Length: 441
Ligand SMILES: Nc1ncnc2c1ncn2[C@@H]1O[C@H](COP(=O)(O)OP(=O)(O)OP(=O)(O)O)[C@@H](O)[C@H]1O
Image (cartoon, helix red, strand yellow):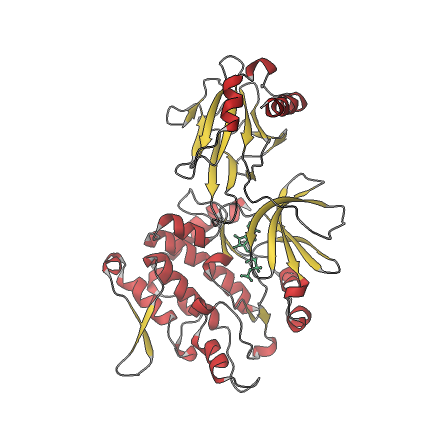
């Protein structure tokens, strides 16, 4: 107990915040010791006048700190903005510690360990971090990590420090929070285990080669890559709203208007990729990240180019890749028929099939079922259950045309963008995109 109090005081001295030794009393130390089931973290508040209090961070509700009476924690000092900052939680899965973020909403500034966050910007919080509103209040953050482990890595470069905060896991890699030493900015560091990559995959198609060339607001931005004996490192922008999988998990189903905004942006990314003959080949909920999730229109980015492939001169592809639940029938056919390279192939249309699956999942919260169409004998997607009664006819029509088993009849990116479900809202969508995506990057 003493040690905890000491570290709080130590930190307060070094950052010259408002925590004072006299304010660390028995009740604070006791609160540090007990962590309730649904309390994921705590903020210890220090103000110049009042006694300290504790804000519990849970997954139920965002915490807004500011002067407005509507805030979950109200401050009286005039240096605080009406809504000064927001604390929110992203739960990726049960085997990972929840990610607790702070978004600066203020004009006067919120400082994170003495660095200005900047209006609209977000930082990932770690145990012992201090948030500060100058001349008003300081907040000491506490989060007990259950799954923290030492990161085994071979990065010896000077530019970044890699932390042990796990942001996500994939089949070939783990993603950690890292810090750019020069700018102090947080980034994501994807550490790829070379032993898990097949040599062909590594030599021909590797993610880094493709990512280096890509620059688009809806595709994760890479800052640097690094190669060591057994690992690859990709340092990329930290995306702070979790992935679409966690978002769907939290929401149950996603309202049609939100789906429209999400699909509109995925199509922008696919348009950019397909123009260059690049197939992503693994479009799924886990590979679509949200920059934020509290506004109606939030930027989304496509990530994980691990199996992406640039097909030169419209060349067809013939490798069985992807995630079965999202994989187009022509890719599945390759595995089923066990055909040799060249005898069975597929093209960029595979990404549109996966988009159809995503839209179905978002709208209904369930995976699609198929039944043979009596005329064509081809499998046709089914819309059973009450949930589909609330979904527009146009959305269902688009899904049917994306989940078209015959690739040559499936809508391509341009045709999807021109489908009435999207096209009738185009000018409004474009304005929102300019305001909320292009202006904010
Ligand atoms: N830039 C990022 N910012 C924040 N979180 C990220 C970022 N990149 C990845 N993640 C998190 O890590 C998870 C896994 O990342 P990614 O899909 O790139 O790994 P992978 O090893 O290529 O996965 P797979 O097994 O699907 O190929 C994502 O679902 C996401 O939750």
